[in-house]
Figure 1 (tube, rainbow, N blue to C red):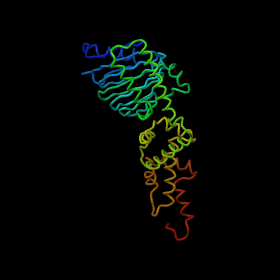
Figure 2: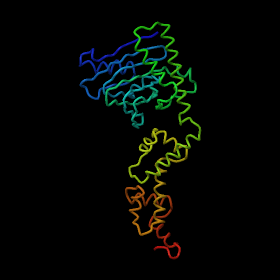
Figure 3: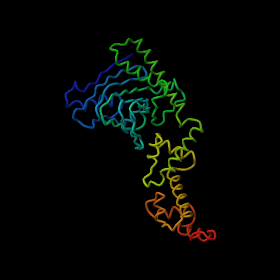
Figure 4: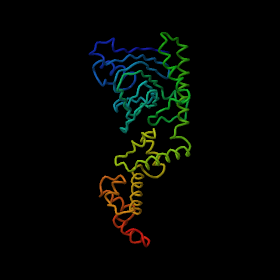
Length: 325
């Protein structure tokens, strides 16, 4: 059976708007702790349609934060939330990794883990709250672990969200029509998630992951000399999450930090060998991306079992006759 509720803060006294949104719309309906970024002119105009197995919220919001806190995670709700906004916003996962989510991009979020959204400006948003059991009955292989970004080009995604929004244009829905809409939306949601899973690199063929890893290593090779280079920088350029990159490095028996250090050290060793004129070890360390000489010396000795200065001296001693001293 369908039920429809409209939440419009402009219908409330200004002093009641934030408490109403936080306690009723946020925590009760969406399972999120919602708070305005700016109290003044706080405005939400949303309608929520509840069907068997899923609910759909659609409408306009002003700038705000929406957080799935530890306390809310403890409520035992393990259902799945699919969200889309027509403006860019920021998302932080349970590990504090923050990403910018582009307008129109779809997020898939199990409600049994923490996350936070920040909407810096007003926009239109659609959220589909899916019963986990109903979804898994249609897609048994689905393992809702972690937060996933779904490309807008995933087959069926546009149809799913267009259908979901269309529910809000109907003022009255019979029980039979509501039951039919519920089944169709659940089938569509399962189809979209299955299609996304089929193209998701986490579960894709090894060749896909290998090509991604090669692209990541090329990225690091281009930027290793930057002292502040981090896994977040590489992930942003590769349009994946830092956690995904960590898994790629784990699959290849290393870590991002170790790979970056080894690349810097190999550069430094080659620089010491091939320098056409005398070069200070400190300068080599800085060129390689290290920020202090003591760290460079320690890591160089650990990797090559010799200090940089001894390595340079030994190389010079065995240089061919006539080579530059």
